[in-house]
Image (cartoon, rainbow, N blue to C red; front, side, top):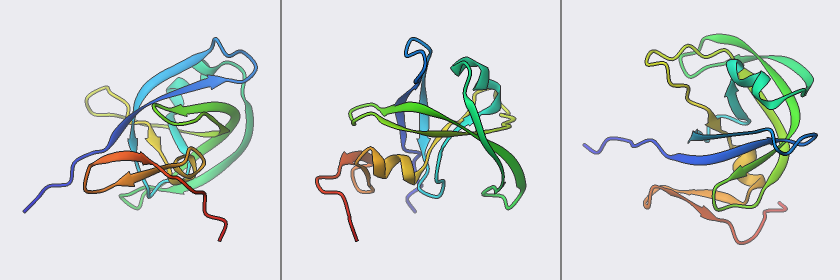
Length: 131
């Protein structure tokens, strides 16, 4: 039996009002998530962001948690074009002290990045889907 590996990509998130304010991290590519998800503990690191909305979320373990959508920010997955979107801040309690930010499908689509399941990597999408 083959085990599923984690697909991780380097990402840079920058403040639009002050591009010098930047977070660089490795993030798990999660096609089950929609947003760029960051730990709430990092929120102040991006300066003053507009809080757009608080939303209820269902986790992979079917637990309901609250998150806060903030932005806009500039998001750049390594090797792909930068986009402007919002981030979702969620309280995370990592067992090993290392946070697992997530890159969701909306961010992947806007960045024109697709998951290559066989090559276990992100690949460029040549054409955007208008259907």
